[in-house]
Length: 96
Image (cartoon, rainbow, N blue to C red):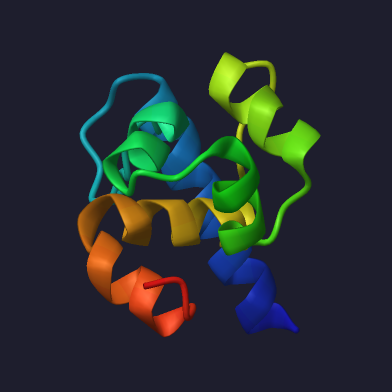
């Protein structure tokens, strides 16, 4: 348990140092916003088709496109893949 405690405390101390602007070895991942409508347009799908393809309800997709909500977790990963390799992902999902 001591090793876990030390790891967590070390990480927290590094996070605090980073937040204060101090130089650390922390790896920072910038999360870029996704343009869901642009991704959908690039694969030439209606909202209904795209919602079905990514496995979400139509109202959820509409909220994402309006920016009321943001996709998280597996949905965000799938949308990132669609933005980078749409043909491959759609083929794997049996939509192409």
